[in-house]
Length: 85
View 1 (cartoon, rainbow, N blue to C red):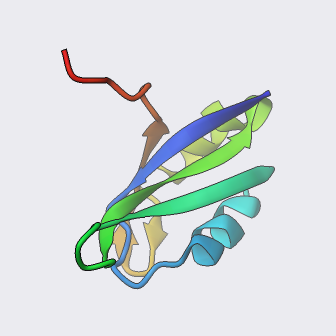
View 2: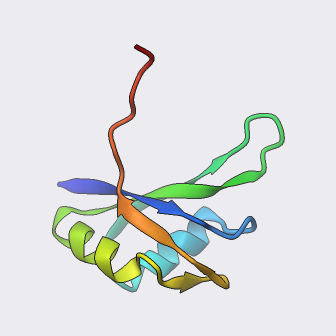
């Protein structure tokens, strides 16, 4: 099983490969994605990393506040996407 972690406060030039490589130092990573602006294609400064279920909680605790690219990351378990009500 996998879980998805929200990763915020990313430097604007971060690639999906950068964030995957960084997280692999702390556990198993299945995929990552950086959220971009639809019009400009520029990073919005956050993304998601899909990790193994057994590593997720520990990774969130260890990496929340950890410096990446000169900025402290915000890492926590991603909330399910809410649709319009």
